[in-house]
Length: 109
Length: 116
Image 1: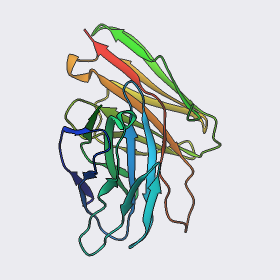
Image 2: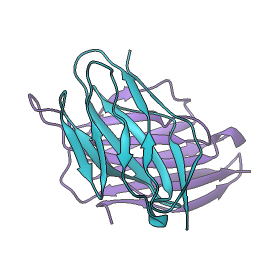
Image 3: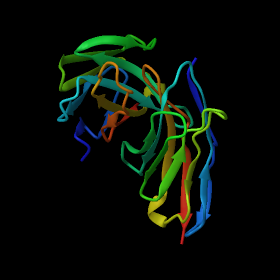
Image 4: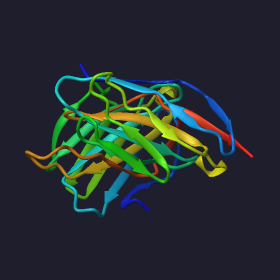
């Protein structure tokens, strides 16, 4: 079946620290992979995506590379800001969109 | 604004009430979805409508009843809910295309439902 596993968190970092949120997936076939972000009181917003192996998605300083050999799509950012505090969801699209449980990130000044 | 609008933003209802959640998308998409987001659980896909036809119902209790009158509007009718149904209900839409890598979904801001 299709599933996504991501690190649970919460994650607390100081401003300008390096961020990694791990995500691995199980899927039949070749899914598209996504990272969504949810700010307090809001719905989910698409952050970045990758549609095939070795693709790198990037947006707002965040990056993730589709690694077929390790079935992973880890989210990284070199220098986080307080405004990056949110919940981050890894997802895969097979027929429908399947989400991980989300990782809450808090960035402190 | 994402182009997907959900109303109301907050709803408190008693277990014997009947209410409806509304979702409207202005993106020209042809598929719409209801998700349930509960604390410490993955988002649960509830219903899928593709070209106004319901194509998926993930074992959702009958006290939740979806309606999709056209490709821009989606409703979730609620009746005799339980306290454990309290959650954030998210609507999403997408443009489904054949023979092309599937894209992500566009989400609304959600309706925060509290059942008392």
